[in-house]
Length: 497
Ligand code: BG6
Image (tube, rainbow, N blue to C red):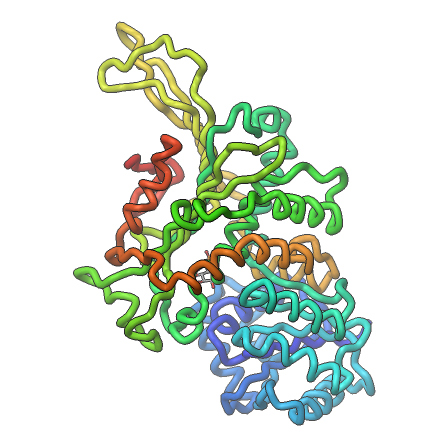
């Protein structure tokens, strides 16, 4: 087989050191990278090969689970090379071409994988320069980070550019949430078990919550984040993918086309947002200073009068037979009390309740919690009689925790996705029509905010659960957010509000 070269644009950036290199090292350590491989980092920072290796080695010790390695990180780093060039400059690509030829000893290396881990402003430029330098060869692949586009129009333009350079089968739009073991397990849970699917619809489900919140701020990413915001950073991609996994129909055969067709069907069924939705069913917030943490506007590279949202909660409807009138409440936020990603499915109450609230316990509707991170697992909450006189019904839990499997730790999302791309499996990557369908749904929100500069942006003190208005939004359905305990150590630690 030809020598394999992965070319990372944005090689001196945050994503490369925190996610990509640790993932590549994980694959290397497990013997899952092709035998003969090179990794070429491209960036504007001036490194020599050896300085770059040193820098990555140092980062691997900080960010990768090096533990008791089969293969040493030093050996992995010996496969790294670095090219200091400006990827926005067409003239630089001759250097890349020369480097690839020299490394592989091949006149026209074909087995290339480009990874775009650059600021999104370069996503449209790099493929055109690759094409001009004839580096878009038939067997090359390209992975592009999210957000793919800034709105519907720019996503369509990007799709157009990519289609002029590569075949769709060569383009891998990455959304690392789909690489999470626990996200994939939503499909196994729903479609490999007979007992849940008959209940998975409007007849039995009252509403669904999807939460992906973090207890960190924007770290060193002020420049990127202030021009992006939570909707583009998390909702248009990660959260809506989770909606799709929760709401989709079972594909007849599990393959890239069928799976991705079902995802697009969910996006196409999203109930278009009305004026009332835009006014009342979307709550955006921005963290303010608290006793121990600075406010968003005090972060580095953030405008002092910034109106970028660091929190968003939305009510979403799906217009199809399965989900009509079942609200999906989604939320994401920075500087929340804890980091957690989970889906909470609220089943309907029993049609008639013969047990009364006694001894402080009331029968309650069943809840199923799919915890994606941390303490990955699944919890089913149901009522049980409290032993003793009378008929007190108390909520208890059936609890599955991944830890208890005792096999492997829950794998790394980036490692899974990079390996899939190397193997040519695009199932877990976003197709061009899906990215546009998702933007089509969210575009009115961006337009509404742009046209209504006074649309509310609620402040919330860093370290709290976001604006109270997001609770108000749910109350009209008799719903409320499920807020996990602050210090999650077990799957079963749920502090009800
Ligand atoms: C990234 C966002 O895509 O996902 C970040 O750009 C966010 O802002 C991150 O912090 C969350 O991912 P995870 O896997 O840590 O939950």
